[in-house]
Length: 355
Image (cartoon, rainbow, N blue to C red; front, side, top):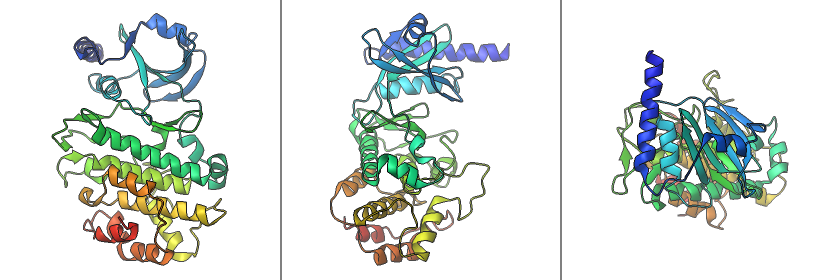
């Protein structure tokens, strides 16, 4: 009885949201429409804790991805977040929500179909060589730049600032031209334009990408800088071609990306990465490492905003010398990644990046 009532309350919250949301809401479909467009859920694309994702087709022939929500967090918060957040956006690097279904407790979200799946599929390999041959270092770099543009738009370009809180490779979808689009806004929070922070009652995000302030009270309210941290961890994963550690993995220097990258730079003349074939590719990886480390500083105040990240990554100027990069890391790395050493001289990054 208790479980039924909880679900009923969630459904009532969603129905009230749908009624009151107004003209900005995407198209609402009946559940029979969802079954029809997916051919009774015949072609399954993936599975998550929320439910499954199925390939479908609209009446006009447009391919779509249909996300079925079998479970809902809180009082339908994830469903409401998704519809409320994405329907406020219009950007080439944000996935397009075409419609939704809420009928008799059945919930579905209809997105544009992304034929190349998630970025995670190209990173989770035994060797980076496999991923780099698939995409190439230049393409990985362009993907990182475009994700930065999408995050900058969420933080600064919307009528209401949107904090994503779950930036990771799995939530970056790639279209047929490998243009990345940020997806999965189930954990997102809306922040009025005149405010820069939001309050949180519980931590949210994915282990390995969650900023320290999200699960710690040391910094008070949470800002868009938490997305910057997650972006930095994701960029380092793109460079390393390795997954971030999960809750069952010891956080040793062999599993934690910043330590792993630092160790390779400190001990070797090259970066210790596979698949780097020329000077240009070496320069790309160095840029990605620097911006990744810049973004994951423990103190949010020392992280750049996404506008600075985007501007620096789009700049054509080369990174400073290997010696300068090594000096930066040798002098300040422990202060970047260890929570007990939260103070860091941000001018060192600015000098290195020549901003």
